[in-house]
Length: 395
Ligand code: LMR
Image (cartoon, rainbow, N blue to C red; front, top):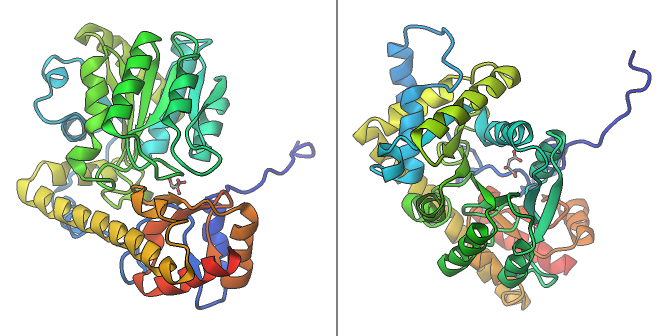
């Protein structure tokens, strides 16, 4: 039965976790997978999450299935978090959230929805994008194409992006990163977003906004700006939201697919399709992470605690960015790597070549994705000088 089964290469991102763990060098530096680490090099469980979990241990009465759309309270609170409490779409019943196993689950569900209900539509991804975007949509049988995002000199290229979007066939799906673009860290400015919106509207494209890092860019509300702009301006929208990073819930697989439809009736049609597809993918979503999020967002004190912890994570990443640029100064490299301070979120497209990345790993046990993507949020502040010296050596 298995004789014809070949081997595929390991995941380009998760594989780095294993390689890093296996490296005996005590001076190793992990800038691979996108997880936040604190000053001790640990990926902490936020205190707000611990408190919510304690509350759940004491109060949870059953482990019976939650419905196909997941925890209704979680869904409602996620709509408030993403679209803003009191958003007219919420009051008009034009938007709903389906709980999914992480942001990846939301993307997979969106892909299945597009494939089943909008056959023939292509999906347009930024070049570059998160590699799993490529395989999720291709895996659902959707034609994947790309629009440019960064130029050869590693700068955000909005003009090239817009020019490409203007040629996208009417009705196709365009995937946009709400903030903290993965892998580059380059985000669109508000004027850029407005121009993208104009093209999307003129060409009647369906935006799918991937929102995996709310709170890691400029703040919880600030990061939602683009999502809310599109939700207000367009009749239809898909949003994939993740609680992995901002709630530190990575392994609990907590996320949502948010749909905005032209009216409440159409929303009900769409949600019936999502429930059907989800049933065939994972039946019902894992409950724990969503219960934690609902507990936090539903309690003013816990929410304030969480926001404070999230703000601290964001500020730490920002200081690591500026710290790294500063540490590159003595090597005459501050200007060359100034973009690290401008980029947002966990990731930086450093501009280092695959050969330089390979040397960093072989000679200094510095781990990052071969494309030159570094997870700045994985950096230990006490090692910034070592990292800068290593980068200088390979440049
Ligand atoms: C990353 O890109 O490193 C994160 O989004 C984690 C993942 O699942 O790949």
